[in-house]
Length: 323
Image (cartoon, rainbow, N blue to C red; front, side, top):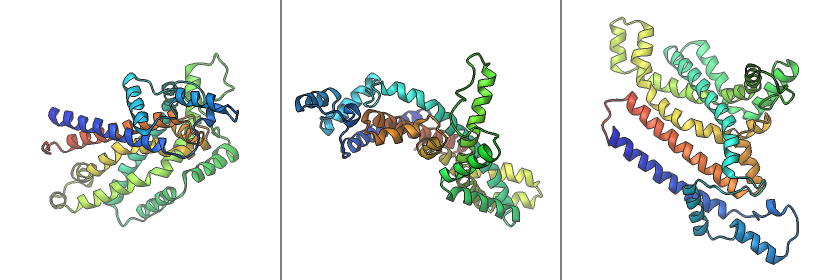
């Protein structure tokens, strides 16, 4: 297991390096002037512009840009934002917390619901309730997330003003309030974006678990357990659920980075200060250091998630041999 883990980690590092090279190359070749955010429509003479290009590295060739990025990563320096003149690492640290909170809770809720309901559907394939649940989950999946969000805002923030329509915390909270009050206020602000993300994503693990459990339910060991009059609950959780986990584990490991990068519309709609809205804004402003820094962070998250999925897969399948 240790030898496999070291080899798998080395593969992940190599993949990260290749992805960073591809990312820097693509961003460097994008059309447009990255100095627009710096100049802010001010006119400068050619000598000043050449000096600014040399200072900020916008006149580098692709190999030079790749080398500068890799050396900066080795030093822990992702550069300065063109738009705000602040360190990119500081900006990412400020934004990653809210995004990880929203993404991780969405992941846990979607997969918890998907695993339980998908297994139940597989064991009751002809049930009317199973068909209704499948239809509702598909409706949520096919609707754009911002449409779901707007409906929830209208229903629960306007028609029934139970939750705030956006933001991370109430800006009017007094400075001397307790941590418990702040925590409850953040939960209220989190409710609608979290519900939006869960409705938009729960169909994937639900249908994946249902398909995997249906395939497992026809295996010889399950049929033998039924012939021995084993209780339905024991068949469900001991003979069907665990063998059907393999595709869900793979999906689980890769889903969090997808949630982080795919929450752009939800974060913008609910004014949620996360990475998704930062990437969208920085791309529009041609803030190359922030775009590259956020991209590198997502690449690392994808590889960490993939590595975690492989580890969980081997734990769930201990008979698997090293390869």
